[in-house]
Image 1 (cartoon, rainbow, N blue to C red):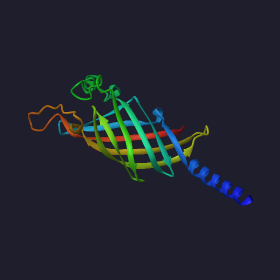
Image 2 (cartoon, rainbow, N blue to C red; image 1 turned 60 degrees about the vertical axis):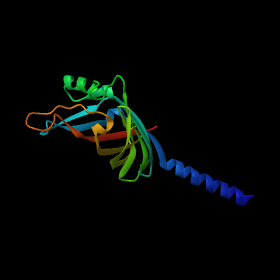
Image 3 (cartoon, rainbow, N blue to C red; image 1 turned 60 degrees about the horizontal axis):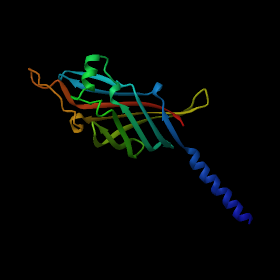
Length: 188
């Protein structure tokens, strides 16, 4: 009986320690930025961000076990109202009919994350680079983690095809969109 008790206690400690090392985090919008950049007229770059987003992720010993994020397309912000209204229109995001962009991780290593990105009703596999910032306890006793995801997508793969030719050659909007998502999360 004493042997069974010891095995039960050891099993409980092992299970407890594996659970304690994993944590579910909720994205902190006050300390997170969801940004992008794209070539304009082949000579410069326009940057923008989204202001309405949410997400959760499961992190265990610096490795992602899951990640799910959602962005509201109507929250696109490049600093120019006329351009933002055009991006919300049917020419680009069609925010009325496709209000959300989503990303669901399928696999991850310490440096790469693969997942399904859905934009404009089209889902494609996208690989993002991970730059892990770490895990800390804030002054209020909350556990926080931070990381940066970077990568690029071809907007035409998602049906965002609008463009205009320019007289000197080339087009108004580049096809490749660079992504930079800087995240801070709070343990849920």
